Image 1 (spheres, rainbow, N blue to C red):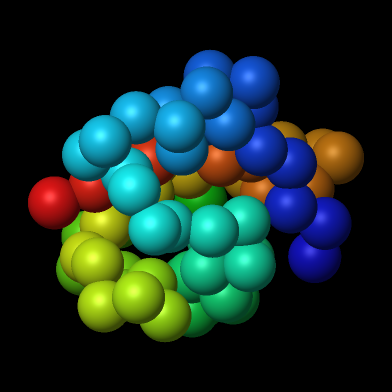
Image 2 (cartoon, rainbow, N blue to C red; image 1 turned 30 degrees about the vertical axis):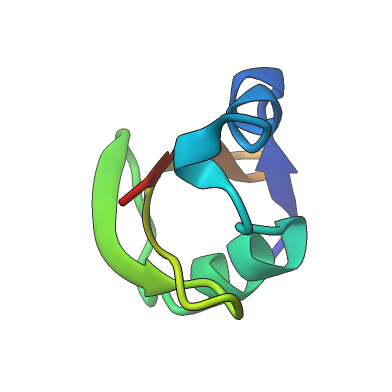
Length: 73
């Protein structure tokens, strides 16, 4: 499945709260979501390689899986 990361989500990766979360971590986390997500939903408890915990807000659209935002813990 194609993963699309919004500009908003990319900007959030530069914030201190999302420090050490990489694009690769996001791609890996989206693969762990097993079902179709027809409306925006928050998925909790993903781990970056750095050990940082983060959440994703995701929605499936015809073009692929849209990552709306990233929330670091």
